[in-house]
Image (cartoon, rainbow, N blue to C red; front, side, top):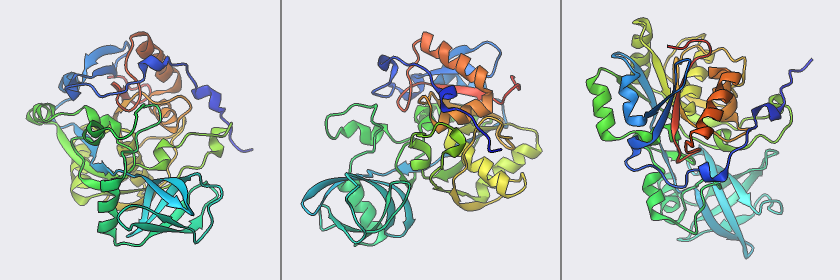
Length: 351
């Protein structure tokens, strides 16, 4: 019999005034809910060094968000295009609005003579676009004329220049994400220096955040949900840092669900080992998942019924996770992308 778990198990109520519309200034002054103890502890993110130990490894995602929301025309009809994963040098999977009447071989015209031909339509609702320029020029045009792909719960009237900087982490280097790895938004240079001086190590990985992370679950049984693929890379240098820590009984702390998914993807493909890797992942983590690498998880507060909330519930335990969320709501923590964060221990392994 096929497994079943109802989506309603991952629902909760949230007053809209707790949805953060802007980041905290300075970034490390955001609140941090310490969920590594039996009783939750209210901290500021700048207090993170008090939780970590020398030799701990923070695995951070160095992806950079591109301005992937484009506006063009198809047969004189205005079309909103949201790129979500590069499949080749100048070929991207994308969502179109409106997209239903779009056909294969249709051409979408943008500014600066940028064009995209629809070469494939997928049952998941997105399309494959082939651009008329080379890879570098496509990215240059996209970043120039596109808008930051802010989530719909962040309300804006048109382009907001501050979001171009606010929606990038301090670690952002590799162009390709269409949503920020939001756990990384809380770090500052000062905090990073404090952590390094304490002996905490940093291991950068790349996961270009795409539809797999942000698309809502629309099925009743969560096991019927199909994750979109996202592209990632784990370098030899990062592998060495992580493996050395594991061999010396040091902790691996994932900064964000995206870093965690890369680590656990590689471990599943490599029989529990961490090795250099690049490729795509569609790993969908739900309660019952056996974690092989990550000891602690730093992450923001996630949307009801989201795959990210399911991942956190798998990591920390569903009942305990929802207790922490209810506590955060009562304490008026700020939720979602620009909101506050929490640090979770693995289920039944409080420190």
